[in-house]
Image 1 (cartoon, rainbow over the protein chains, first blue to last red):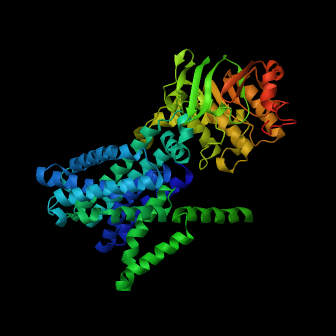
Image 2 (image 1 turned 90 degrees about the vertical axis):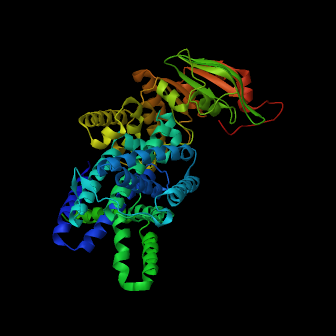
Image 3 (image 1 turned 45 degrees about the horizontal axis):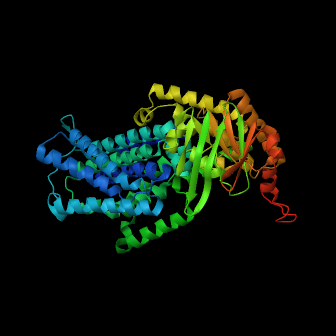
Length: 316
Length: 262
């Protein structure tokens, strides 16, 4: 891990431990839990889109697969939740392989539309054949680890953010590895990748699988937390929300995915006081932030830190 | 080592290559010259697997490679550069070279994410080897700059360095001197000679800079309108009347005709 990443990682762990101790309010922790769930999906899309350059508007599909498969398996078959969550990831991975058949032939806007179509297909399947149809179903068991139920809000907060930290660790290592470099290379020139002997097809399939597995994990965690799910949570709107998280945070930076997820999740809560105007203000803030921080929040923050350091060095 | 046998290729009604045959000897610097549109780049694209020829065969160390994908051909030991530089612009200079090391290394998705000791060891090896290559092509001082920020001359040399990182047997250079000034072209010539002498890598060079071609190549093949019109040492080719006509035009047809592409 590079210096900046290690420092950021340290801050992340510190905040995770501290937040439940400082604020015991269930409300704050619940918002924190949803931020963490969204961060998992956003990290997957960040690697897929920001690093490997493959746009996806279908992440809600994988998220939905995670939620539904895990819920059904644990509720109706009685599988332990850890197992049903893993099983859901496998199903999502298979779906990703199927999606990559058309996706490998497409780029840019065309890929965006194809993935959007994939998300819609999953949404329609959940609506038509999911338990409860459009109105969804409940009584999904709470998350439990090796027989111990994780039912306190603080406990679930630690579980989610512990997983966010673990996934972040994995993702940073991946990005700075041989594979990560290959993914970024695909983004810049597939022609040159071929000439270097890189198997572009295999790499693209793998990165689609990775993003699907992250989203599926998040979906399962969501379902076992809220214990009631319906298809509306897994519509195109959610895919776009995740896309916004990644863009607002900074596409080419993994930390941007976490920051973006927190900002997009917390912002509507902060805007509650504007009552019926909240959606308007929300839209205005997002538009302005994209106009003025086009690179995303994290890259801008890094530039600022470098500037301040530059001044400090100059003074000495 | 490389044998091109009766290659033909047409695009729509346009015949780009007609019955092209020639051999490249191991350890040679082979130049491929000819006026614009003669089919030089098309031929490189066929050898590197980007295009499939309509007819004919390419043999690399006696093995038929014409049906293979670009990736597989690269893995056989044929690397290349591009006429329009194809660097990874958003990656640093050293990272570009490191991508070239991809085929020679093997850490997977999972082990990389978990940062297993074997991955760390391999990563150090990639780093070391890549720095070595950067020193070799004299770009060590640019190590951490973004590739897209380099001047064109250095970009072309970096592209050669990236090709070398795959430890090829044969490197195809597509107009490496395009856009370079006289001094940069001279340095490039030195690097190409060094690659052949020290690394024993065979080179096929498509180039318009006749000065460079005549100075560094062992053998020259001249293409015109998709056909081989001459093949021999630089000296032989320079004296060939057909080559002179192809380059300067037939005196009787166009009095004082001059082609700008030399």
